[in-house]
Length: 331
Image (cartoon, rainbow, N blue to C red; front, side, top):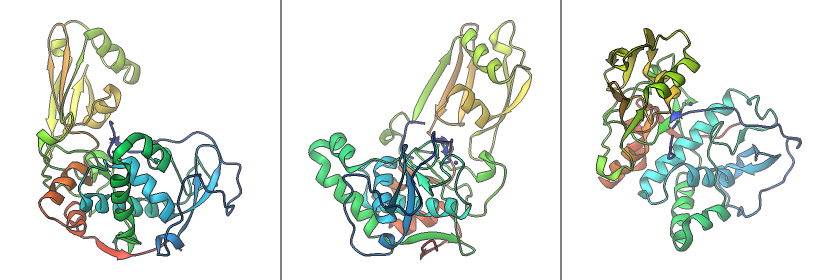
């Protein structure tokens, strides 16, 4: 379940959008085998350095500490240009997210590993070598911020009723986040709808437009919803659009078939479920706001709060209501 910094939460985002799909392959390595990816530095002793993970790298299972794995996740999920307090909030959210999923057991995609390096399954992960290539002359500054975000939050996890929470996050909301049941089946008491201070001018592609020719729209919908009736003028194809309290589409009728906004987003590849629709004889036009599933922490909202002087603890407790932030380690 995400959506982080990435083009596309669904949940993805989700979680965070994204969410998350299964990664290919199964490890042939034995649990407990030490086989570290190259270019990963040893970390100073701390709680994260004592938490050992089995990580599927796409080919084999390797052993890494949380102190080694987590910086790669933060590099992959949030722009290093963001404020230090936003990066710290991201580090805690990611650490919590990892422990939450470890509580539920290993995934079928990597039964010999706790986590992987595939954003479609667990988390995006970027090595130091890749970061050097991406960041160029800014590498030393950006990597310092990433390492600081992890070290200064060492072992910190968000808990609800004494357990790690589903710390969903997404790139940007439409000024207000969604509660968990807006996107998934059930409500979670800490994932409620809250105002989020995104500045549209500072968020890339905050507003987006998807325009479909009638035949393209018909083909995409019928491939997933064959019961839809899409004949004649497109002007009558999309009706009964209903929005929820967060401004996202709760339900809409397409060709006589009632669909959730999240379902439409998935079928058409929209950046979020916060959209309006205009149908003409020659096109079906979706105007979309924000990026990701909209649940939990908005990354651009977190950065805006950090710019206002909020601490990483204040940012997290704004987006995840009723949680405690404590030193915690998987046992």
